[in-house]
Amino acid sequence: MPEFFRQAFQELGTSLENEGIHMLECEPNYCIWFPDHDHIELSRDIPHLKAQMEYHEGPGGFNRFCTFLAESGLQYELCKESVFKQSFPTLRSMFHPALFKGFLHIRPWTSMYSQVAKYFRSEKMRRVWSFESMYLGISPYRALGAFSLLPYIEMTDGIWYPRGGFQRVLHALSEVGRRLGVEYLLDSPVAKIELSDDNAKATGVRLETGEVLRADIIVVNADLVYAYNHLLSPSREAERLRKRSTSCSSISFYWAFNEQIPELRPHNVFLAGRFRESFDRIFDDHDVPEDFSFYVNVPSRVDVTAAPAGRESVMVLVPVGRLVDTLDRDEEEKRWNILVAQTRDIVLDTIEARTGARNLREKLVHEIVNSPLTWREKFNLDRGAILGLSHDFDNILWFRPQMKHFAIKGLYFTGSSTHPGAGVPACLLSGKFVVREIMKDWMEAKTTTKDYRRWQGRPTGGSGAILKLSGGSIPDDTQLTINIDTASSQLDTFTQYQQISTSHRQSFATGHPARIKNQYLDTWTYSQPPPWRDPPKVVIEDREQAIETCAQIEARQELTLYIDGINIF
Image (cartoon, rainbow, N blue to C red; front, side, top):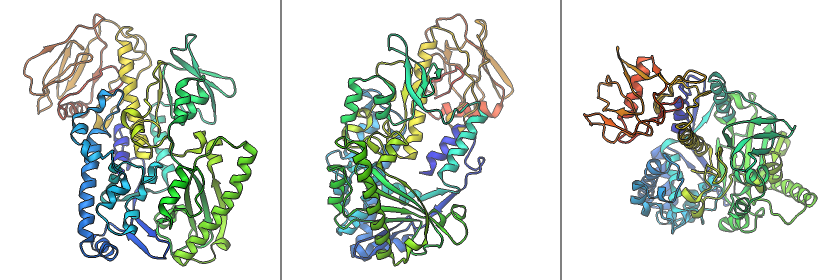
């Protein structure tokens, strides 16, 4: 889903290209290896894909695949318009017109596997087009039918790899933040979230060193269940969260080989023979299946910077059950050391048997391993569940934990256990949604205090503009000024708003929280006067930025404007 990454950088006033990030397309998307030594390449090359589908599905197989893709596309468009653009803070918010209209396409009563089985006759193809539910850490036999949008996204958008790995994207985001004034305090583990005396407001965080950092707003991007159970005082909500269904864990190997392995493609999936039983073992028994599926990524196949010339870097992900609470730490460590060793041998043997690769053990020169234990101890993932809470029906949309703490003001959450869920693109959206929630709450609080200190802004590309306020206290007699073209109009902010013309040359103003109800409105509309006498002064000096702001407003029928140094939505 490269558009989510492009959008994230555009909203920060830059782009992937400007930050030196080059996206490389992986072709084919996958090579799927079966236990009987058969395999299929999922290519975006239509003639090649058609030939493979007809081979495995017989006459009409490709036509059924196209029908499946069209149905999955409807589900994706529904989610794109109604799920990926908003959070669901209330039950009522689930009755979004687009979501309600497309409820039948969500298919909460059928599983992803059953949805796929409607279109494919062979068991192999049913597994091929349903295994991607594991991206969300859920069995295809339990995932909602709507999650068949996952193969649609990959077949239409392709699979892309940032040169230098995802660490390159993380580094670029951090550098953009530094340019915008963000300060990062690294290697500083948090021991506790500090609260006010009445436990009604978050006031800061206490580090493991004992140092306390005071803050007006705290956003927790650690594992949500961990945060409730370890960074806050014990509560019923923390107990309830631990009772919710979780995603799986994994045994992940990071290997360096002193020779290339030409038999492997960039993305490889080795499917279990006892497919359904392997998922039952993971999610019901919370254990390692005897016969398991696993994923193998060879980044050096598409990115020459991923390994020295003539060598190979390989990542293996084996989904396994999360940790259980019945073993003590010593027993757990012994058990998982044995399981990791057994899993390593099975993976190497399976790759050699199905692909024809030879002498992998002799070529393996370096290894790093993450097991459920390290996911828990090193990354603070509750019971080692790598994708947070599960994505069954009672863990999505409004049913998923809220981004704002229900009782503690100033405390927010983001990440895979909040809406919209697990995965890097979804977590990017989660960050965007929590910012919206924060600004909404912040403005509601500031309308009675007039305290606008510390807020600064900058242009944000395609999502509007952040308007800059001078630091310190704002004089009461200042006004809003917006320069568009060569004309400048001074308007009483928060008292009126008007039509934005197609030429983008008319000045505009907004009430708080004013909404543009009709972009063709020709008359002034007056809102309730503000609690203070006159608003702060804000100036957009750059003509192109002003035009872009107006264009963004004009593009939406209903829009709330926050002229407060934070953002425009």
